[in-house]
Length: 370
Image 1 (cartoon, rainbow, N blue to C red):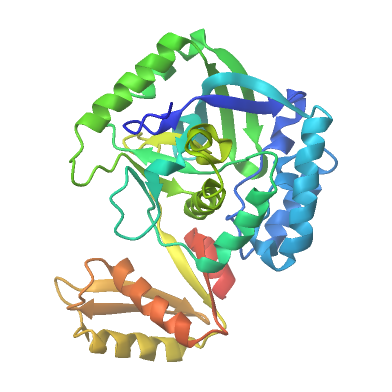
Image 2 (image 1 turned 180 degrees about the horizontal axis):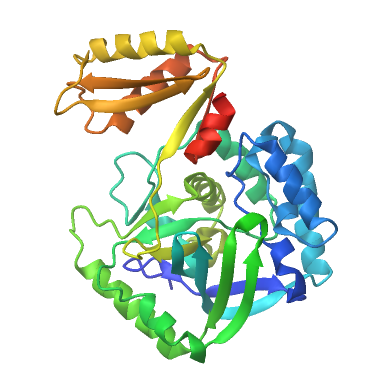
């Protein structure tokens, strides 16, 4: 029976039967490198004929090819199950993950999230919430993938505020006692990944006890237990699909239906290796000089001025070999990103020919706008 105080559950987790080619098997999330199709072409060459999650996802740089790609994705999922490519690795358990990247080693817990406790709507007071607004056109293709999917290959990262390191870290301290499921380098310089099975009832109980303690210290009026650190659109699609399915279920079926749950990786925001990096906005199909004028007009309409000052917000704009920093004094939005996003939301509605993408990495942004 789902526990509304915790929202996280063990589940049946599958892995490749042949674990000799896991580097080819594991690829990055579908929402990465959305404006860099060459990256995905390189991944395809690297994977070759090996089984790979590349065949189970829809990279968003290929959204214009969604119908035919989604049909192939569904077929690949069925084939992987029918041909024994994927087999159960953990039953009624979690996977403890150690991920080594350039920022260090961090740990996570792969589990199932109860979508009844998640609401992506702005202003939500649910236990699990989104960390960014969704881009409308990115959700329907993911829903189409999910509706016909025999498998879930999640990239959703959930963040919790656990300053005492009480949920995941005690498990990692005893990881040598756990069954190691995989230990391999990730492709394309992605780092290294190690996973351990967590199936002992005592370990599962300790996880629940720690989560209950976190839940108990939350405000009853605003009980935020988990926030989506990455994968907002995928989880929003999972929620939307669940709401569709739920309408046709009995109350008894609603409690146990598999679509009620989404696979996620839980991480602690206090993990020293968890690096928070900015997400840059890249606009396609616009004129840089005109855009600067329109930002100035937007600021003026909001009672703000383009002027430097101790409380000024700064927005860097790079285009056509130029770099301009706008200083905005008196914005009604608390953060510069809020001011920028408010402008972009209105501007995009008035300029349907333009396209907005969210990009990690300053070097990538500079390459795209050069």
